[in-house]
Image (tube, rainbow, N blue to C red):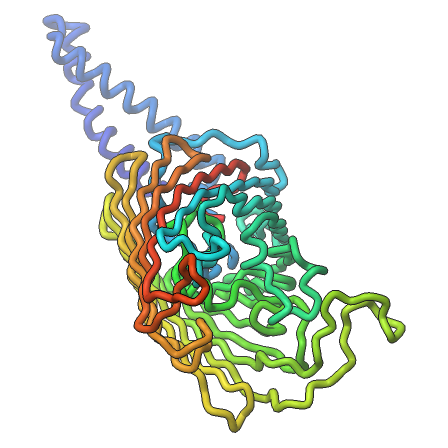
Length: 470
């Protein structure tokens, strides 16, 4: 309570107490007080004692404690879903033993699935999928170990770090391969590893250095935080991670700016001498709306020939480092314009929209390849533990930049999420992919069809000290 309010309350009670002396005198020299008069006098005495206690508290402490300052990390743009899947009905979560006193949290994640493709594809392969790539197979999709100590200016902590280790089938998707990493085996199990420092500039300018997950595209890595089990085409197409520097600044509670200077898209080690850049704007006009506008630009072609499966190096250096230049033109640029917004429509409904435009040239004078389209999401919380989530995505692949051929592809996905308590989810999902060209596999390698239908049962376990989205 502000001190001014305490003072006004004191004057008010004092005014009440002045006339109360008259009945007291009557008690000494006249008729006895009524029960109502005695009750009022007792209530006034209790209020006077509370006011005295409040005055004593504020005279010793000065003023109420201020709200903790927001750190730059707290408003770092993220592509995690604002509308979480089904949540536990527990009101106040217990403090985890994996949340340590210095702010460090230790976290674990296990994600597996069984999927079935009704096309019976050769090799049990689901095309155009990111994290449910196999059919008729019990799959260990992802095991994650996350250690984090985020900066927190309210605790005078400017330094921070994060490490995400990843194992399982999804590592083959998210950790890059020979197409974009000079030596993918060196960094295979490190999904994120970066250090942070908040410079004393304005509200705090956070600088991150290392390998970090990309915020291009609405969807992100950890399944527990996503609306659907499978991922849209745009998650599969846009970059998964970057290596370099990232600067984040909160202008206020509604606007955050971010700038990247990185090796490239999905490149822990650069395979050309060009550094890519990105500008990220996050706007939160209300607590229920978040809008991201992202622009990325870089060169994504090699300037040296790959040295895959390296043996003994020919030069006195590490295995796998190539010194053989390419002879084809490789100075073309990649441009990505990506935007997405999420809307919380109340305690049971939320939605999100994403739009993308991508253009790439292998050489500066080459014909461009383009990808554009978008996705829409809808979340409905049926009960405290059960949710229903839907997605529709459309992608126009002009020049085969995504799928290898010029075509239009679409997906319709419906996912039921059951979370009986915090730390466990099971997901049942139906998805239909369809294209305007024969593209999807069947059990006959010579026959391609224009659609594939899959059913997936996913199960996710997680525990640790980190709260909210990972």
